[in-house]
Amino acid sequence: MQTIEMGDLRFALDDALEWHDDEGTLVAYLPGTDFANLRVTLLTIADDRDRPIAGGGTRTLRREAEKGGLRVMESGDTLWCHYTEPSSDGAPGSTMHYWYAGLDAYFLIVSCFVEAAMADDAQVKFVLGTVPGMIASVEVA
Image (cartoon, rainbow, N blue to C red; front, side, top):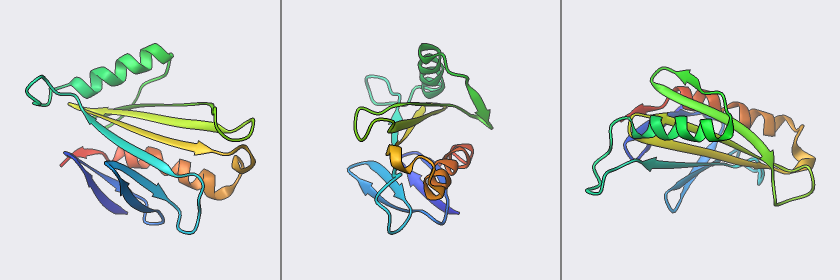
């Protein structure tokens, strides 16, 4: 596993994935592929003086989960949820996968577009399957 530091958080990313920074968003993918890219964005819930608000990320996660009728799961101190919806891009049947994770003042968003024709591809399933472990490893750096 690779250790990734993003802002004030650190998490593990599967060694099989390469990654790069895209203007503050981490993009992770299998080498040599141009599909099933994970996009990871970190938000810090802060006050008007840019000081992190204790519990702000977990409250945001609970609020988003409640709005979407999503089940909240726990991995250590991190709360998270996942949902999939039809994508407005790609062929009919393409999907967007979203994971939200809240830890203290931090709110992590992971998203992944899956083209309909690739939905059953083993590599796509592998990439999507790495996200729960990544979320379980999130900690304040």
